Length: 177
Figure: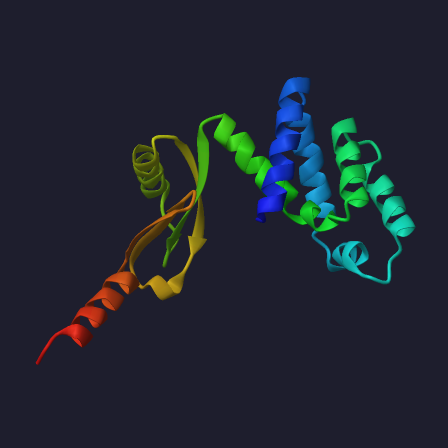
């Protein structure tokens, strides 16, 4: 997520809060983000072979039926030649939306699928560590061998066997014989 996308998302979020349109804009941004995830759409917006008029038509079609604030943002980004912001706009906006509600998203990585009780315990632990309500998603990482790696926001808690073995290796390499 780029700093420029965060700035535009912040401005859009503040305008949406004022207009009472945060949920509507979040839905529209999710749809736009899904539409722009294809390689063809990305190429159309970033290719130097595509003219500004063609990009304007593409953005007009993309903005059709969307909230007026989003349509206005499309115009600003086209005018300032910053269409690359569109690719990171939804994640930045979503992060602001979560922060406004006092929530965080996280990922728990483990070598095997976790049970519901284990996931609930890790969610509670992540909430205590961060001081916010946390929603965790699971990711399987067999290379961890054992234990878990917990990513909450931009903080990593690594309790995996792989990390322990790497630390042990480092200490053994530094030990004098």
